[in-house]
Amino acid sequence: MATIEIDNRGLAPPEPMVRILAGLKELSAGDELVALMDREPRMLFPELERRGFAWEFAPEGDGGVLTVRRLASE
Image 1 (tube, one colour):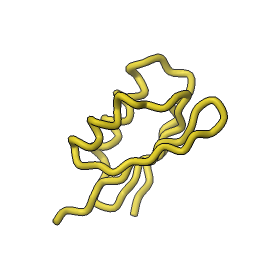
Image 2 (cartoon, rainbow, N blue to C red):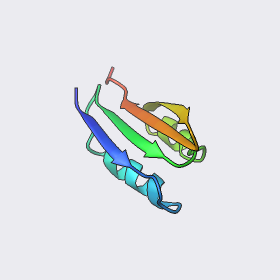
Image 3 (cartoon, rainbow, N blue to C red):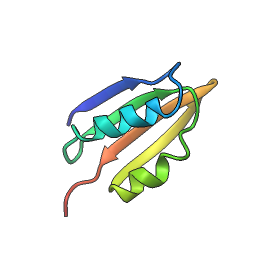
Image 4 (tube, rainbow, N blue to C red):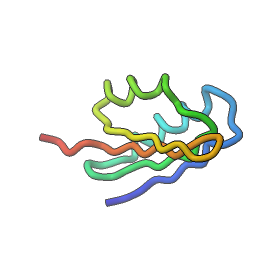
């Protein structure tokens, strides 16, 4: 299992979303992407689901941590 870490703090929209979507291309089944965020990326969640990724957002201070996992192929 591999983990890609991205620090999106301090970036103006849509840069955090662009960086996350680019990083997802590198994930294999079971891998995850962890992104430090300034805010909850609510507009990203439907796109992650549409592309077949599971996600969770853990609020921390003024931002939070977004974890995205590629679901295993069936």
